[in-house]
Length: 598
Ligand SMILES: [Fe+2]
Ligand SMILES: [Fe+2]
Image (cartoon, rainbow, N blue to C red; front, side, top):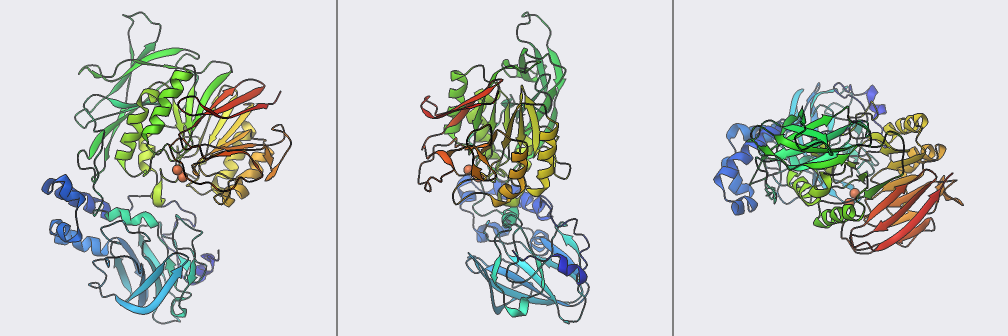
Protein backbone atom coordinates (compact mmCIF):
# COMPACT_ATOMS: atom_id res chain seq x y z
CA UNK A 1 0.00 0.00 0.00
CA UNK A 2 1.58 3.24 -1.08
CA UNK A 3 -0.07 5.71 1.22
CA UNK A 4 2.26 8.59 1.80
CA UNK A 5 0.83 10.97 4.37
CA UNK A 6 4.22 12.00 5.66
CA UNK A 7 5.45 13.36 2.34
CA UNK A 8 2.64 15.86 2.42
CA UNK A 9 3.73 17.42 5.65
CA UNK A 10 6.15 19.61 3.72
CA UNK A 11 3.44 20.88 1.42
CA UNK A 12 0.26 20.83 3.47
CA UNK A 13 -0.14 22.01 7.03
CA UNK A 14 -2.27 19.40 8.71
CA UNK A 15 -3.76 21.56 11.43
CA UNK A 16 -6.54 19.78 13.23
CA UNK A 17 -5.23 16.31 12.40
CA UNK A 18 -4.85 14.67 15.78
CA UNK A 19 -2.96 11.59 14.70
CA UNK A 20 -2.39 9.47 11.66
CA UNK A 21 -4.01 6.46 13.26
CA UNK A 22 -7.36 7.60 14.57
CA UNK A 23 -10.57 5.84 15.31
CA UNK A 24 -13.33 7.77 13.56
CA UNK A 25 -16.28 7.82 15.87
CA UNK A 26 -19.92 8.33 15.08
CA UNK A 27 -21.58 11.54 16.18
CA UNK A 28 -18.87 14.00 15.15
CA UNK A 29 -21.05 15.42 12.38
CA UNK A 30 -23.53 18.30 12.86
CA UNK A 31 -25.87 16.33 10.61
CA UNK A 32 -26.93 13.91 13.30
CA UNK A 33 -29.33 16.20 15.17
CA UNK A 34 -30.81 17.50 11.91
CA UNK A 35 -31.57 13.99 10.70
CA UNK A 36 -32.96 13.04 14.11
CA UNK A 37 -35.39 15.99 13.98
CA UNK A 38 -36.51 15.12 10.45
CA UNK A 39 -37.00 11.49 11.48
CA UNK A 40 -39.19 12.64 14.37
CA UNK A 41 -41.46 14.67 12.05
CA UNK A 42 -41.68 11.83 9.54
CA UNK A 43 -42.60 9.35 12.28
CA UNK A 44 -45.44 11.61 13.42
CA UNK A 45 -46.77 12.17 9.90
CA UNK A 46 -46.57 8.74 8.32
CA UNK A 47 -47.78 5.22 9.02
CA UNK A 48 -45.13 2.53 9.53
CA UNK A 49 -45.81 1.27 6.01
CA UNK A 50 -45.38 4.76 4.55
CA UNK A 51 -42.15 5.22 6.50
CA UNK A 52 -40.75 2.00 5.11
CA UNK A 53 -41.71 3.12 1.57
CA UNK A 54 -40.24 6.60 1.93
CA UNK A 55 -38.60 8.18 -1.13
CA UNK A 56 -36.58 11.36 -1.57
CA UNK A 57 -39.71 12.98 -3.00
CA UNK A 58 -41.97 12.07 -0.09
CA UNK A 59 -39.46 13.04 2.57
CA UNK A 60 -38.32 16.39 1.14
CA UNK A 61 -41.42 18.37 2.27
CA UNK A 62 -40.46 17.46 5.85
CA UNK A 63 -37.01 18.99 5.57
CA UNK A 64 -36.97 22.65 6.61
CA UNK A 65 -35.02 25.08 4.36
CA UNK A 66 -32.32 25.65 7.01
CA UNK A 67 -31.96 21.89 7.46
CA UNK A 68 -31.61 21.43 3.72
CA UNK A 69 -28.84 24.04 3.67
CA UNK A 70 -27.12 22.20 6.51
CA UNK A 71 -27.41 18.83 4.75
CA UNK A 72 -25.98 20.47 1.59
CA UNK A 73 -22.97 22.15 3.15
CA UNK A 74 -22.20 21.16 6.75
CA UNK A 75 -21.59 17.44 6.37
CA UNK A 76 -17.94 17.72 5.43
CA UNK A 77 -16.06 21.03 5.82
CA UNK A 78 -12.58 22.45 5.68
CA UNK A 79 -10.80 25.73 4.98
CA UNK A 80 -8.27 26.35 2.21
CA UNK A 81 -5.67 29.15 2.22
CA UNK A 82 -5.43 29.56 -1.57
CA UNK A 83 -7.83 29.16 -4.51
CA UNK A 84 -8.43 25.45 -5.18
CA UNK A 85 -10.31 22.97 -7.30
CA UNK A 86 -12.26 20.47 -5.20
CA UNK A 87 -13.01 17.06 -6.76
CA UNK A 88 -15.82 14.87 -5.43
CA UNK A 89 -15.37 11.22 -6.43
CA UNK A 90 -18.84 9.65 -6.60
CA UNK A 91 -19.63 5.97 -7.27
CA UNK A 92 -20.84 5.82 -10.87
CA UNK A 93 -23.41 3.19 -9.78
CA UNK A 94 -25.04 5.36 -7.14
CA UNK A 95 -28.60 5.79 -8.46
CA UNK A 96 -29.42 9.23 -7.09
CA UNK A 97 -26.93 12.05 -7.46
CA UNK A 98 -26.34 13.70 -4.05
CA UNK A 99 -29.10 16.34 -4.07
CA UNK A 100 -26.79 19.30 -3.43
CA UNK A 101 -23.97 18.54 -5.86
CA UNK A 102 -25.14 20.37 -8.99
CA UNK A 103 -26.76 23.18 -7.00
CA UNK A 104 -23.43 23.82 -5.27
CA UNK A 105 -21.80 24.41 -8.65
CA UNK A 106 -20.12 21.05 -9.19
CA UNK A 107 -19.87 19.81 -12.78
CA UNK A 108 -18.99 16.33 -13.99
CA UNK A 109 -15.48 16.20 -15.44
CA UNK A 110 -14.34 13.83 -18.14
CA UNK A 111 -12.32 11.83 -15.63
CA UNK A 112 -12.71 8.57 -13.70
CA UNK A 113 -11.01 7.12 -10.64
CA UNK A 114 -11.08 3.39 -9.91
CA UNK A 115 -10.35 0.85 -7.27
CA UNK A 116 -10.81 -2.91 -7.48
CA UNK A 117 -14.59 -2.75 -7.06
CA UNK A 118 -15.79 0.74 -7.94
CA UNK A 119 -15.59 3.30 -10.72
CA UNK A 120 -15.94 6.86 -9.46
CA UNK A 121 -17.16 9.83 -11.50
CA UNK A 122 -15.24 13.03 -10.79
CA UNK A 123 -17.29 16.18 -10.04
CA UNK A 124 -15.33 19.41 -9.77
CA UNK A 125 -15.75 22.98 -8.62
CA UNK A 126 -13.33 25.90 -8.15
CA UNK A 127 -13.28 27.63 -4.75
CA UNK A 128 -11.60 30.85 -3.62
CA UNK A 129 -9.49 30.75 -0.47
CA UNK A 130 -11.82 30.27 2.52
CA UNK A 131 -14.40 27.68 3.47
CA UNK A 132 -15.42 24.58 1.54
CA UNK A 133 -18.65 22.91 2.66
CA UNK A 134 -19.91 19.66 1.16
CA UNK A 135 -23.18 17.80 1.60
CA UNK A 136 -24.45 14.34 2.45
CA UNK A 137 -23.82 11.23 0.37
CA UNK A 138 -27.58 10.75 0.06
CA UNK A 139 -30.67 9.88 2.10
CA UNK A 140 -30.11 6.19 1.47
CA UNK A 141 -27.06 4.46 2.93
CA UNK A 142 -25.34 3.92 -0.35
CA UNK A 143 -21.86 2.49 -0.24
CA UNK A 144 -19.24 3.27 -1.45
CA UNK A 145 -19.30 6.77 -0.01
CA UNK A 146 -17.87 9.67 -2.03
CA UNK A 147 -14.39 10.94 -1.23
CA UNK A 148 -12.58 14.17 -2.01
CA UNK A 149 -9.36 15.53 -3.43
CA UNK A 150 -8.16 19.13 -3.34
CA UNK A 151 -5.58 20.81 -5.58
CA UNK A 152 -4.31 24.41 -5.58
CA UNK A 153 -5.26 26.30 -8.73
CA UNK A 154 -1.71 27.69 -8.84
CA UNK A 155 0.57 24.61 -8.89
CA UNK A 156 3.32 26.59 -7.14
CA UNK A 157 1.08 27.67 -4.25
CA UNK A 158 1.53 26.13 -0.81
CA UNK A 159 -1.85 24.59 0.06
CA UNK A 160 -2.99 24.49 3.67
CA UNK A 161 -6.10 22.58 4.77
CA UNK A 162 -7.47 23.47 8.20
CA UNK A 163 -10.59 23.43 10.42
CA UNK A 164 -11.88 20.04 9.35
CA UNK A 165 -15.39 18.84 10.17
CA UNK A 166 -15.39 15.99 11.18
CA UNK A 167 -12.29 17.14 13.00
CA UNK A 168 -10.31 13.89 12.89
CA UNK A 169 -9.69 14.15 9.15
CA UNK A 170 -6.64 12.46 7.69
CA UNK A 171 -4.95 13.76 4.54
CA UNK A 172 -3.25 11.40 2.10
CA UNK A 173 -1.71 11.95 -1.31
CA UNK A 174 -3.92 11.25 -4.33
CA UNK A 175 -2.45 8.53 -6.49
CA UNK A 176 -2.51 4.84 -7.34
CA UNK A 177 -2.12 2.83 -4.14
CA UNK A 178 -3.77 5.42 -1.89
CA UNK A 179 -6.32 4.28 0.66
CA UNK A 180 -9.69 6.05 0.71
CA UNK A 181 -11.69 4.38 3.51
CA UNK A 182 -10.48 4.19 7.12
CA UNK A 183 -12.57 1.08 7.68
CA UNK A 184 -11.03 -0.70 4.67
CA UNK A 185 -7.44 0.51 4.43
CA UNK A 186 -6.42 -2.40 2.19
CA UNK A 187 -8.76 -1.17 -0.56
CA UNK A 188 -6.56 1.18 -2.60
CA UNK A 189 -6.93 3.22 -5.77
CA UNK A 190 -5.92 1.37 -8.94
CA UNK A 191 -6.48 4.16 -11.48
CA UNK A 192 -6.07 7.90 -10.96
CA UNK A 193 -6.00 10.47 -13.81
CA UNK A 194 -2.80 12.48 -14.10
CA UNK A 195 -4.74 15.69 -13.48
CA UNK A 196 -5.50 14.57 -9.90
CA UNK A 197 -2.23 12.87 -9.03
CA UNK A 198 -0.42 14.38 -6.09
CA UNK A 199 -3.46 16.33 -4.86
CA UNK A 200 -4.50 16.25 -1.21
CA UNK A 201 -6.75 13.21 -0.76
CA UNK A 202 -9.36 13.34 2.00
CA UNK A 203 -10.40 9.79 2.89
CA UNK A 204 -13.60 8.93 4.72
CA UNK A 205 -15.35 5.88 6.15
CA UNK A 206 -17.78 3.78 4.15
CA UNK A 207 -20.45 3.94 6.81
CA UNK A 208 -20.74 7.72 6.95
CA UNK A 209 -23.70 7.50 4.58
CA UNK A 210 -25.68 6.15 7.53
CA UNK A 211 -25.55 9.61 9.17
CA UNK A 212 -28.30 10.87 6.83
CA UNK A 213 -30.02 7.53 6.37
CA UNK A 214 -33.80 8.03 6.04
CA UNK A 215 -34.79 6.09 2.91
CA UNK A 216 -35.21 2.41 3.74
CA UNK A 217 -34.02 3.26 7.21
CA UNK A 218 -37.06 2.95 9.47
CA UNK A 219 -37.26 -0.18 11.61
CA UNK A 220 -39.41 -1.58 14.40
CA UNK A 221 -38.28 -3.37 17.50
CA UNK A 222 -39.88 -6.74 18.11
CA UNK A 223 -39.22 -6.29 21.82
CA UNK A 224 -40.27 -2.84 23.03
CA UNK A 225 -39.46 -1.94 26.61
CA UNK A 226 -41.88 -1.56 29.53
CA UNK A 227 -41.83 0.36 32.80
CA UNK A 228 -40.69 -2.90 34.45
CA UNK A 229 -37.05 -3.95 33.92
CA UNK A 230 -35.99 -6.39 31.23
CA UNK A 231 -32.74 -7.21 29.37
CA UNK A 232 -31.13 -7.99 32.74
CA UNK A 233 -27.46 -8.68 32.12
CA UNK A 234 -24.51 -9.68 34.31
CA UNK A 235 -20.92 -8.75 33.43
CA UNK A 236 -17.73 -8.11 35.35
CA UNK A 237 -15.94 -4.79 35.43
CA UNK A 238 -13.84 -5.78 38.44
CA UNK A 239 -12.66 -8.83 40.37
CA UNK A 240 -15.03 -11.79 39.74
CA UNK A 241 -14.41 -12.93 43.34
CA UNK A 242 -15.85 -9.80 44.93
CA UNK A 243 -17.89 -7.85 42.37
CA UNK A 244 -20.63 -8.05 39.78
CA UNK A 245 -21.93 -5.50 37.28
CA UNK A 246 -25.68 -5.55 36.60
CA UNK A 247 -27.41 -3.88 33.67
CA UNK A 248 -31.02 -3.64 32.53
CA UNK A 249 -33.51 -1.66 30.49
CA UNK A 250 -36.82 0.10 31.04
CA UNK A 251 -39.08 2.44 29.09
CA UNK A 252 -38.42 6.19 29.58
CA UNK A 253 -41.24 6.37 32.15
CA UNK A 254 -38.86 4.77 34.68
CA UNK A 255 -36.15 7.18 35.70
CA UNK A 256 -34.38 5.50 38.57
CA UNK A 257 -33.25 2.04 39.46
CA UNK A 258 -31.51 -0.03 42.12
CA UNK A 259 -30.00 -3.44 42.53
CA UNK A 260 -31.27 -5.12 45.70
CA UNK A 261 -29.16 -8.09 46.76
CA UNK A 262 -28.40 -10.45 49.64
CA UNK A 263 -26.84 -13.85 50.08
CA UNK A 264 -29.00 -16.48 48.44
CA UNK A 265 -29.34 -18.55 51.61
CA UNK A 266 -30.38 -15.56 53.75
CA UNK A 267 -33.57 -15.84 55.80
CA UNK A 268 -36.75 -14.81 54.02
CA UNK A 269 -37.03 -11.69 56.16
CA UNK A 270 -33.32 -10.75 55.90
CA UNK A 271 -32.75 -7.20 54.65
CA UNK A 272 -31.69 -6.49 51.05
CA UNK A 273 -28.67 -4.27 50.39
CA UNK A 274 -29.28 -1.62 47.74
CA UNK A 275 -27.01 -0.03 45.16
CA UNK A 276 -28.31 2.86 43.06
CA UNK A 277 -27.80 2.48 39.31
CA UNK A 278 -26.67 5.09 36.83
CA UNK A 279 -29.09 5.69 33.96
CA UNK A 280 -28.62 6.79 30.38
CA UNK A 281 -31.18 7.25 27.63
CA UNK A 282 -30.61 5.47 24.33
CA UNK A 283 -32.18 7.18 21.34
CA UNK A 284 -32.59 5.51 17.96
CA UNK A 285 -34.73 7.94 15.91
CA UNK A 286 -35.32 5.35 13.20
CA UNK A 287 -37.18 2.84 15.40
CA UNK A 288 -40.80 3.56 14.58
CA UNK A 289 -42.47 1.99 17.58
CA UNK A 290 -40.03 3.04 20.29
CA UNK A 291 -37.13 5.39 19.72
CA UNK A 292 -36.09 5.88 23.38
CA UNK A 293 -35.29 3.47 26.20
CA UNK A 294 -33.53 3.86 29.52
CA UNK A 295 -30.48 1.75 30.28
CA UNK A 296 -29.34 1.19 33.88
CA UNK A 297 -25.97 0.04 35.18
CA UNK A 298 -24.83 -0.71 38.74
CA UNK A 299 -21.75 -2.38 40.15
CA UNK A 300 -21.90 -4.50 43.31
CA UNK A 301 -18.58 -4.60 45.13
CA UNK A 302 -17.29 -5.97 48.43
CA UNK A 303 -19.02 -9.30 47.82
CA UNK A 304 -17.90 -12.53 49.50
CA UNK A 305 -15.93 -14.94 47.25
CA UNK A 306 -17.48 -18.27 46.39
CA UNK A 307 -20.93 -17.13 47.47
CA UNK A 308 -24.35 -17.29 45.83
CA UNK A 309 -26.32 -14.03 45.86
CA UNK A 310 -29.95 -13.37 45.13
CA UNK A 311 -30.69 -10.06 43.43
CA UNK A 312 -33.51 -8.02 41.97
CA UNK A 313 -33.33 -4.90 39.80
CA UNK A 314 -35.72 -1.96 39.46
CA UNK A 315 -37.40 0.44 41.84
CA UNK A 316 -38.62 -1.18 45.07
CA UNK A 317 -40.75 1.86 45.98
CA UNK A 318 -42.84 1.73 42.82
CA UNK A 319 -42.72 -2.08 42.91
CA UNK A 320 -41.41 -2.05 39.37
CA UNK A 321 -38.81 -4.65 40.18
CA UNK A 322 -37.66 -7.89 38.61
CA UNK A 323 -38.10 -11.36 40.08
CA UNK A 324 -35.13 -12.55 42.14
CA UNK A 325 -32.35 -14.32 40.24
CA UNK A 326 -29.07 -15.62 41.59
CA UNK A 327 -25.43 -15.30 40.67
CA UNK A 328 -22.29 -16.79 42.14
CA UNK A 329 -19.00 -15.02 42.88
CA UNK A 330 -15.73 -16.71 41.92
CA UNK A 331 -13.99 -18.79 44.60
CA UNK A 332 -11.30 -17.10 46.72
CA UNK A 333 -8.62 -19.47 45.44
CA UNK A 334 -8.62 -21.21 42.04
CA UNK A 335 -10.82 -24.26 41.67
CA UNK A 336 -11.74 -26.21 38.54
CA UNK A 337 -14.46 -24.42 36.57
CA UNK A 338 -16.44 -24.54 33.33
CA UNK A 339 -17.17 -21.72 30.90
CA UNK A 340 -18.85 -21.51 27.50
CA UNK A 341 -17.35 -20.00 24.38
CA UNK A 342 -19.67 -18.69 21.66
CA UNK A 343 -19.14 -16.50 18.62
CA UNK A 344 -21.19 -14.77 15.94
CA UNK A 345 -24.56 -14.96 17.66
CA UNK A 346 -25.83 -12.24 15.27
CA UNK A 347 -28.92 -11.60 17.44
CA UNK A 348 -30.39 -14.89 16.22
CA UNK A 349 -33.05 -16.95 18.02
CA UNK A 350 -30.76 -19.97 17.52
CA UNK A 351 -28.11 -18.38 19.73
CA UNK A 352 -30.73 -17.73 22.41
CA UNK A 353 -31.91 -21.33 22.27
CA UNK A 354 -28.28 -22.41 22.57
CA UNK A 355 -27.80 -20.31 25.70
CA UNK A 356 -30.95 -21.80 27.24
CA UNK A 357 -29.61 -25.29 26.56
CA UNK A 358 -26.10 -24.77 27.89
CA UNK A 359 -27.19 -23.73 31.34
CA UNK A 360 -29.60 -26.65 31.61
CA UNK A 361 -26.76 -29.01 30.67
CA UNK A 362 -24.09 -27.42 32.91
CA UNK A 363 -25.82 -25.50 35.67
CA UNK A 364 -22.53 -24.95 37.50
CA UNK A 365 -20.81 -23.16 34.59
CA UNK A 366 -19.28 -19.84 35.58
CA UNK A 367 -19.76 -17.54 32.57
CA UNK A 368 -19.89 -17.23 28.76
CA UNK A 369 -17.52 -15.57 26.32
CA UNK A 370 -18.80 -14.31 22.96
CA UNK A 371 -16.01 -13.44 20.55
CA UNK A 372 -17.80 -10.83 18.44
CA UNK A 373 -20.63 -10.27 15.96
CA UNK A 374 -23.08 -10.39 18.83
CA UNK A 375 -25.56 -8.63 16.53
CA UNK A 376 -25.98 -8.07 12.80
CA UNK A 377 -25.77 -4.28 12.83
CA UNK A 378 -24.24 -2.72 15.92
CA UNK A 379 -25.87 0.66 15.21
CA UNK A 380 -29.42 -0.79 15.33
CA UNK A 381 -30.88 -0.88 18.80
CA UNK A 382 -33.59 -3.29 17.64
CA UNK A 383 -30.83 -5.82 16.86
CA UNK A 384 -29.62 -5.49 20.45
CA UNK A 385 -33.24 -5.84 21.66
CA UNK A 386 -33.36 -9.21 19.86
CA UNK A 387 -29.99 -10.27 21.25
CA UNK A 388 -31.06 -9.59 24.83
CA UNK A 389 -34.57 -11.00 24.43
CA UNK A 390 -33.32 -14.33 23.08
CA UNK A 391 -30.55 -14.64 25.64
CA UNK A 392 -32.48 -13.31 28.64
CA UNK A 393 -32.64 -16.37 30.93
CA UNK A 394 -28.89 -16.98 30.67
CA UNK A 395 -27.77 -13.37 30.86
CA UNK A 396 -29.53 -12.70 34.16
CA UNK A 397 -27.82 -15.72 35.74
CA UNK A 398 -24.26 -15.87 34.40
CA UNK A 399 -21.89 -13.10 33.30
CA UNK A 400 -21.46 -12.64 29.55
CA UNK A 401 -18.04 -11.30 28.58
CA UNK A 402 -17.90 -10.15 24.94
CA UNK A 403 -15.30 -8.97 22.49
CA UNK A 404 -16.14 -6.67 19.59
CA UNK A 405 -16.76 -8.01 16.07
CA UNK A 406 -16.94 -6.12 12.82
CA UNK A 407 -20.76 -6.27 12.92
CA UNK A 408 -20.84 -4.72 16.40
CA UNK A 409 -18.84 -1.72 15.16
CA UNK A 410 -20.06 -1.79 11.59
CA UNK A 411 -18.74 0.37 8.76
CA UNK A 412 -16.13 2.08 10.91
CA UNK A 413 -18.84 3.91 12.85
CA UNK A 414 -17.71 3.01 16.33
CA UNK A 415 -19.29 0.76 18.93
CA UNK A 416 -21.50 3.18 20.87
CA UNK A 417 -24.43 0.82 21.41
CA UNK A 418 -22.19 -2.14 22.28
CA UNK A 419 -20.51 0.03 24.90
CA UNK A 420 -23.86 1.34 26.13
CA UNK A 421 -25.06 -2.20 26.76
CA UNK A 422 -21.99 -3.80 28.39
CA UNK A 423 -20.21 -2.62 31.52
CA UNK A 424 -16.67 -4.03 31.20
CA UNK A 425 -13.22 -3.66 32.76
CA UNK A 426 -11.35 -0.44 32.01
CA UNK A 427 -7.91 -2.00 31.97
CA UNK A 428 -7.19 -1.92 28.23
CA UNK A 429 -4.46 -0.12 26.29
CA UNK A 430 -4.20 3.51 27.40
CA UNK A 431 -4.25 4.79 23.81
CA UNK A 432 -7.66 3.22 23.06
CA UNK A 433 -11.14 4.02 24.30
CA UNK A 434 -11.92 2.14 27.54
CA UNK A 435 -13.84 -1.15 27.75
CA UNK A 436 -13.17 -2.12 24.12
CA UNK A 437 -10.05 -4.19 24.80
CA UNK A 438 -9.78 -5.57 28.33
CA UNK A 439 -8.53 -8.44 30.45
CA UNK A 440 -10.03 -10.41 33.30
CA UNK A 441 -8.94 -13.36 35.39
CA UNK A 442 -11.13 -16.15 36.68
CA UNK A 443 -9.63 -18.96 38.76
CA UNK A 444 -6.26 -19.90 37.30
CA UNK A 445 -7.03 -18.47 33.83
CA UNK A 446 -6.59 -15.07 32.19
CA UNK A 447 -8.72 -13.89 29.29
CA UNK A 448 -7.47 -11.13 26.96
CA UNK A 449 -10.50 -9.75 25.13
CA UNK A 450 -9.18 -8.03 22.02
CA UNK A 451 -10.88 -5.45 19.79
CA UNK A 452 -10.00 -6.29 16.20
CA UNK A 453 -11.86 -3.22 14.92
CA UNK A 454 -9.32 -0.93 16.61
CA UNK A 455 -5.73 -0.50 15.38
CA UNK A 456 -4.07 -3.90 15.85
CA UNK A 457 -0.51 -2.71 16.48
CA UNK A 458 -1.71 -0.37 19.23
CA UNK A 459 -2.73 -3.40 21.30
CA UNK A 460 0.45 -5.50 20.97
CA UNK A 461 2.46 -4.12 23.87
CA UNK A 462 -0.62 -4.33 26.09
CA UNK A 463 -0.94 -8.08 25.35
CA UNK A 464 2.72 -8.46 26.24
CA UNK A 465 2.28 -6.59 29.53
CA UNK A 466 -0.82 -8.57 30.56
CA UNK A 467 0.85 -11.91 29.95
CA UNK A 468 4.04 -10.74 31.64
CA UNK A 469 2.33 -9.74 34.86
CA UNK A 470 -0.23 -12.51 35.26
CA UNK A 471 0.31 -15.49 37.51
CA UNK A 472 -2.61 -17.34 35.88
CA UNK A 473 -1.63 -20.72 34.52
CA UNK A 474 -4.00 -20.90 31.53
CA UNK A 475 -3.95 -18.10 28.97
CA UNK A 476 -6.73 -17.28 26.51
CA UNK A 477 -6.67 -14.57 23.83
CA UNK A 478 -10.11 -13.83 22.35
CA UNK A 479 -10.29 -12.01 19.01
CA UNK A 480 -13.09 -11.87 16.47
CA UNK A 481 -10.93 -12.21 13.36
CA UNK A 482 -9.08 -15.54 13.11
CA UNK A 483 -5.33 -15.32 12.61
CA UNK A 484 -5.44 -18.62 10.70
CA UNK A 485 -8.20 -19.55 8.28
CA UNK A 486 -7.97 -20.20 4.54
CA UNK A 487 -8.85 -17.19 2.36
CA UNK A 488 -10.01 -15.09 5.27
CA UNK A 489 -7.25 -14.78 7.81
CA UNK A 490 -5.79 -11.64 9.25
CA UNK A 491 -2.21 -10.87 8.27
CA UNK A 492 -2.08 -7.79 10.52
CA UNK A 493 -3.02 -9.88 13.56
CA UNK A 494 -0.55 -12.62 12.64
CA UNK A 495 2.30 -10.16 12.25
CA UNK A 496 1.58 -8.09 15.35
CA UNK A 497 0.19 -10.52 17.90
CA UNK A 498 1.40 -14.05 17.13
CA UNK A 499 5.03 -13.43 18.18
CA UNK A 500 3.75 -12.17 21.55
CA UNK A 501 1.29 -15.04 21.98
CA UNK A 502 4.12 -17.45 21.14
CA UNK A 503 6.60 -15.83 23.52
CA UNK A 504 4.19 -16.24 26.44
CA UNK A 505 2.85 -19.58 25.22
CA UNK A 506 -0.82 -18.64 25.13
CA UNK A 507 -2.83 -21.84 25.31
CA UNK A 508 -5.87 -20.89 23.23
CA UNK A 509 -6.67 -18.15 20.71
CA UNK A 510 -10.46 -18.03 20.31
CA UNK A 511 -12.07 -16.44 17.25
CA UNK A 512 -15.15 -16.39 15.02
CA UNK A 513 -16.13 -14.30 11.98
CA UNK A 514 -15.87 -17.03 9.31
CA UNK A 515 -19.01 -18.86 10.47
CA UNK A 516 -17.24 -22.21 10.52
CA UNK A 517 -15.91 -24.43 13.28
CA UNK A 518 -12.15 -24.98 13.20
CA UNK A 519 -9.59 -26.24 15.71
CA UNK A 520 -5.96 -26.06 14.71
CA UNK A 521 -3.15 -28.37 15.64
CA UNK A 522 -0.93 -26.70 18.23
CA UNK A 523 0.99 -23.97 16.38
CA UNK A 524 4.02 -21.82 16.96
CA UNK A 525 5.35 -19.19 14.56
CA UNK A 526 2.77 -20.22 11.98
CA UNK A 527 3.96 -23.85 11.97
CA UNK A 528 2.37 -26.93 13.52
CA UNK A 529 4.20 -28.30 16.54
CA UNK A 530 4.06 -31.71 18.17
CA UNK A 531 2.00 -30.94 21.26
CA UNK A 532 0.07 -28.22 23.08
CA UNK A 533 3.00 -28.04 25.49
CA UNK A 534 4.87 -26.32 22.63
CA UNK A 535 2.23 -24.21 20.94
CA UNK A 536 -1.15 -22.47 20.82
CA UNK A 537 -4.46 -24.02 19.76
CA UNK A 538 -6.44 -21.72 17.44
CA UNK A 539 -10.14 -22.32 17.78
CA UNK A 540 -13.02 -20.81 15.80
CA UNK A 541 -16.68 -21.44 16.49
CA UNK A 542 -20.06 -20.31 15.17
CA UNK A 543 -23.16 -19.86 17.34
CA UNK A 544 -25.68 -19.33 14.56
CA UNK A 545 -27.57 -21.77 12.31
CA UNK A 546 -25.56 -21.09 9.17
CA UNK A 547 -24.76 -23.75 6.59
CA UNK A 548 -23.16 -23.23 3.21
CA UNK A 549 -19.78 -24.00 1.71
CA UNK A 550 -16.37 -23.76 3.33
CA UNK A 551 -12.89 -23.67 1.81
CA UNK A 552 -10.73 -26.83 1.70
CA UNK A 553 -9.28 -27.86 5.05
CA UNK A 554 -5.73 -26.56 5.47
CA UNK A 555 -2.92 -28.71 6.90
CA UNK A 556 -2.86 -26.77 10.16
CA UNK A 557 -6.52 -27.61 10.90
CA UNK A 558 -7.09 -30.65 13.08
CA UNK A 559 -10.87 -30.27 12.71
CA UNK A 560 -12.81 -28.03 10.34
CA UNK A 561 -16.58 -28.27 9.93
CA UNK A 562 -19.49 -26.23 8.67
CA UNK A 563 -22.00 -27.59 11.17
CA UNK A 564 -25.09 -25.77 9.86
CA UNK A 565 -26.30 -25.40 13.44
CA UNK A 566 -25.28 -23.09 16.28
CA UNK A 567 -22.41 -24.48 18.35
CA UNK A 568 -20.83 -23.60 21.66
CA UNK A 569 -17.55 -24.80 23.06
CA UNK A 570 -17.56 -25.98 26.66
CA UNK A 571 -14.22 -25.52 28.41
CA UNK A 572 -13.48 -27.35 31.64
CA UNK A 573 -10.44 -25.73 33.28
CA UNK A 574 -8.56 -27.85 35.79
CA UNK A 575 -5.19 -27.43 37.41
CA UNK A 576 -3.18 -29.55 35.00
CA UNK A 577 -5.49 -29.87 31.99
CA UNK A 578 -8.15 -28.19 29.89
CA UNK A 579 -10.89 -30.33 28.40
CA UNK A 580 -13.07 -28.88 25.67
CA UNK A 581 -15.95 -30.14 23.59
CA UNK A 582 -18.03 -28.45 20.91
CA UNK A 583 -21.76 -29.09 21.18
CA UNK A 584 -25.02 -28.03 19.61
CA UNK A 585 -28.12 -27.27 21.65
CA UNK A 586 -29.23 -30.91 21.61
CA UNK A 587 -25.89 -32.05 23.02
CA UNK A 588 -24.51 -33.54 19.78
CA UNK A 589 -20.73 -33.52 20.04
CA UNK A 590 -18.82 -32.02 17.08
CA UNK A 591 -15.33 -32.04 18.59
CA UNK A 592 -13.46 -33.07 21.75
CA UNK A 593 -9.95 -32.14 22.80
CA UNK A 594 -7.77 -32.20 25.87
CA UNK A 595 -4.68 -30.12 26.61
CA UNK A 596 -2.47 -31.34 29.44
CA UNK A 597 0.17 -29.15 30.99
CA UNK A 598 1.38 -30.27 34.43
FE1 LIG B 1 -20.25 -13.01 11.85
FE1 LIG C 1 -17.41 -10.90 11.63
